[in-house]
Length: 490
Image (cartoon, one colour):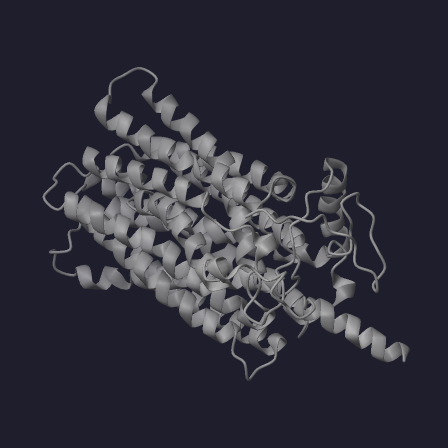
């Protein structure tokens, strides 16, 4: 009898099943479609489409579309330094103020950041104009820490265990449309440009779109009122005391220390952008070709996320097997793409480009060989999708996932800050490239024990200490769920 009761409890936790939904506690019919997990995942993708998606389009041009790449690199140092610090505590802020407020606050910095480059274009000789760009980068870093923590928690909380790769893929497709369309706009508006910097109208268009993204964040549904596709209720985000939140942050590390082995993989996940954007695309190509390369790069990410997401959600295989296949797939792509990239990187240095500043255009003979840049986009989306999936396979609790995604974005941003600073200090291209390749390999090696020892075919209640913690920080026994405050707001 006791064994049967325990099995029932574990089943309840694995799928987060609620009692049968009736007409009184189910979402109102008029809001059912709006609150559907797929709809909310797409909406979340569009919020990030308008913010970080367009930021990626600008940043992917190399030097954020500017001639002065050092200022853009230093702005990224400020951005990612603040991002790293904020992301580490943003999980606590998210759990305290809620997903919608965190998402909205997180979107506000993108318009300001892009506006700083518009100001640089309009008043290039104004004293201190570069300081405005650096300050805007720092503010964006704080905002981005909030946005990506809320995004990660929601994206991993909406799906069932068997759908996490699919939902990550859907989000990544919509999100990367921002990079594709943004790069297409930059390509069209700068097609006849000979200045190698982005036009003012491009920046103005991006400012308007990023502000629309901030407003869109306010229309997101409250996850507390949502049901997954199997009828189970999305685990509600608690609003505990700050003491309980600080306790929970430490508890997430204490009860799941193997997350530390994913830190090198997290560190690598933005490290490679510096070489790809500044030290390859930014230094070798004309502005219109940089925009074209960016459009192809972000478009490839849409397909890469679908591919890896399908593998990681393959229903005929156990979750542990899928994790292993995903790991091998990443290793093959890391070696393939960077073997190709090394072939081109060994052919130029900072000194050789200074001596011969001629840039490659898409009309130049031999350009087709350089377009293998597309596979770096595939690798980027697969790496990010797999990182989220690995975290999602370790927990179903939005509060814990908020901490995990906070760790992820913090380490990711710390790495980005370091390597962007190295680029601003004019470290040799080959050194930056070699560190990128080495860190990707190290990240996969360190992640292997996590996949083998920590990821199970189902997430059990014993692994969900935070789900059993009440709003005052008390952890309840396995058979007893903590009380949750009622929240019926949209």
